[in-house]
Image (cartoon, rainbow, N blue to C red):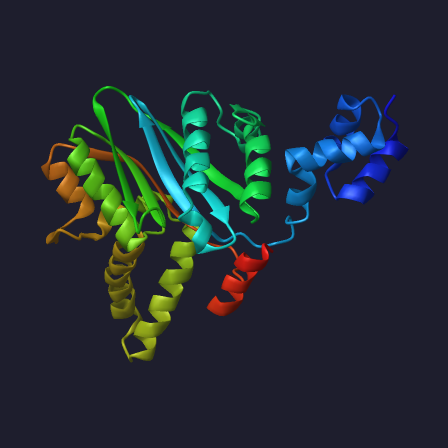
Length: 291
């Protein structure tokens, strides 16, 4: 019988998680030393020691099969690992596993089968083998109808990934939309997605600017609406000038090709993660030392 005290002792000895320790003890019939070896063999003890590290590098990728697509981001500690073939193969295994499943949440994705047991087991095993903290950060599943098209675009080898879905136009048009999203990093796809409080705040700032320019309030209010359109043009994908033809916005470009934008997802590796402040020489030394 596995007791709480046994689990506690194993956790203190290995740094592994409670559920991993409990499983190890159960697999080893309560034998403490065998359970330690079990965790080491699985790479779990080693991997857990890396949990406090920051993984803000890595790759984003897109996988498509018929009417279903998956966009995901997997992180590593250094850019070196993002060029590692084993790391890339792990991302491909994760992506294809999700693509072939009905998973929509991270918990469901991590529980999917992999070559190491589950996706979670795969990440733990590769963390131990590669020697850096690896983290499956996020993913999104997109589905389409037969009359719709996916457009995927990877920038800088997967530093940025963008996936779009449009109706009534070709895959090439959809890819151009994804390229636009990757290059211009819009905050929103449609004007309707911008929160009212954000619009109200911008309107107030623009009004103050106009008043400070000495304009009467009625004139200032009219100027605000014109400047708001410029604000939306900067942050909304559909209203941005199309990078291949500055005479039209993105929405018009798609419409001119008989299409309509339905959905766009953009991932940039490490976006929003606080990164390490470390010089290149130190990063190389860490690689050599296996830290």
